[in-house]
Structure formats: structure tokens, C-alpha cells
Image 1: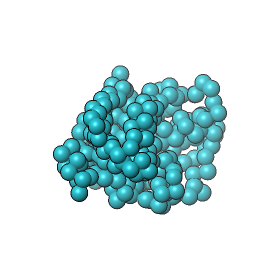
Image 2: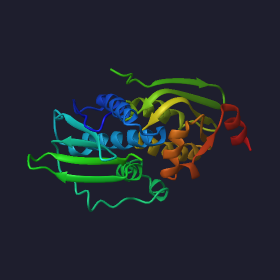
Image 3: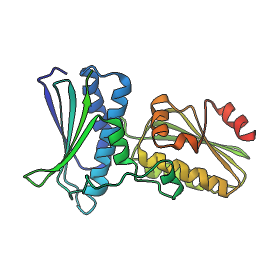
Amino acid sequence: MSSYEAYELQVPGEAKSLSLIRMVVTSLAEDAGLPQEEIDKIEVAVDEACTNVLDHAYENYCPHPPVRLMIHSANNEFVIDVEDEGTHFDFEHHKTPKFPEHWWGGHTRGAGIFLIKKCMDNVHYERLPNEHNRLRLIKKIH
Amino acid sequence: MPKRRLDIQIEQSDSVAVVSLEGALDSSNVEDFKKTLEPLCRLEHTKVLLNCEQLTYVSSMSLGLLFHYHRACEAHSSQFALFGVWERIQNILRLLGLDTVLNIYGSRDEAITGLDA
């Protein structure tokens, strides 16, 4: 992917969209010249981000609104914006569990944001003026 | 459209159940995975082996279930193990500390032998 190219992808807000999202994002990350190990991390982060939208932001929405992704690379960064129309989340004050202790407490979920932060170089979450939410995932291109 | 379905095959003998997964395990198919694993993890004195040789991707929701099944097997005097896990998935298991609490082996034979030890 050349530095001036940007891509937009809008998919139904359903779990069946996740494989398409992963395929498109990993393909673009490969085009951007990222190594496979980093592409694998991006795949995890974007899948977890979109899963959180479907399961949490859209929890009380029927039918689910779409999920929109904007992907571009510039200034040695590969950037994925995940935009939803659902309930806002207090990302700043989210307390990340400790692992593996978290699992001993009987939990089977709760690792998504931890993985997103571990897999990406920078993560920003904000409420947009149009009342959508945007999670920006940034991977540095070395 | 890319392949969404997770193919699940079960081979079951007296004391060993091998569940082979092919494809990606995410929230679109995790219910199929749960329906397969939950009855197996209630069996007594059984080695429940998850064949991950053709498993290309696993979401955190599904990884979290693995420890749940590990403990369920223990509660029924059974054992739970994974084998053939791709390096990219092992990396995520490490990040979540699951590599220290799950039985993970290279191959089916290593899993059966290792669980006997």
C-alpha cells in the first residue's frame, strides 16, 4: 500500500463479517510491507476491536448498525480506524486484568482490550462529533 | 467471501477424544465449538485433545474457554491438552499467560504420552 492510499470498508455489524475484516486488513498490512509477526498482531487487534463493537457497543441495538473501517499508511505508520454507531465506552478508565490470574477467577472473557494494547504501538479511542465512536489502532512501520 | 465456517471433527475411543479444528475460531462460530467441547469435558477419565494443526486463528473469547475446559476436565478426573498449535497462536497464549496453565504439546503422540507421565 502506497503512503497516499486509504481504504474504507463498511460491513454489517455481525460476527460473520469478522473473517472478511481480518482478510482485508491483513492483506493491506502485507502490502504496507509489515513483517508477518506484526501482521499477525494487527489481525488479533482488529478482530478483538470489532468483536468488542459487536458484543458491547451494539449489545442493545437490534438490528446492529454497520461497522466501518478506514485503513491507511502514512508517516511510517499503518493506521486502522474502527468506527461504530453504538454505546460509548470509558476506554481511559478501563482496568486491564492481570493474566493468568484473570482465568483463575473463572472468567472466560475480558482479554480483548489487553490484547489490542499489547499488539499495537498506539491505541486511541474517542467519541466523534457525529456521535460515532472511533478506535484508532496504529502500528509503526520500521 | 472468505471461508467463515470452522470445521470440527471428533474421534473418540474409550479414553481419548480428539477434536480437530480446521479454520478460524472467532465469535461467529464459538457456539459450535462450545457445543462440541462441553459434553466431552464432562466425561470421566478421558483425555480430551484439541488438534490445532489446521487452526489458523483463535479469538480471545475462545482462548478464554480453553482454561474453562481444562478445569472442567480436571473436575471429572479427565485431562485436557492442545497439540499442533501454530506459533502465531502460541504467541497469544503466552501474552494471556495461558501457556503456563494449559497442557500444550507438539503432536498427538506427545500429548497422549505427556498426559500419561
